Amino acid sequence: MTYTAVLPILGFNDVTLYELENVDGVFYRLKNKEGEAPAFMLITPNAIRNDYVFEIPDEAAEKLGLTEETVPLTLNIMILDTTLEKSHVNFLAPLLFNPDNGKMGQVVLDSSKYPNFGVAEPLENYIRKETDPCD
Image (cartoon, rainbow, N blue to C red; front, side, top):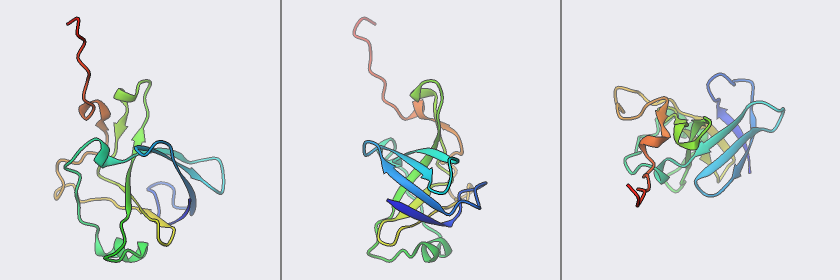
């Protein structure tokens, strides 16, 4: 689905149209519809942690056109590494998507209100490792 960025992604203020592609329900791709860059790999935060809850600032909710009936899609930018486990997730600046009107944006949360959300948290902290039966 195509989304209009009403709250720009930090550092990409000139990019206004993005295409969001669902890879597998946990991972998504976000691509600039107007050029080649930027492109982001995103993750559904609730797939890896059950404590990811925050208040959407009123100003952001208004710009995104969120209502009490709207269920926004919340995704987080990943910084990919050579292995998925070594990748990092930005939990402090989620992307919110309003599927009802095609608006999206990045919200930067107050780190003092959400001290458990980091800017570059290792994904391996949230992946349950399988134990080797030979150990």
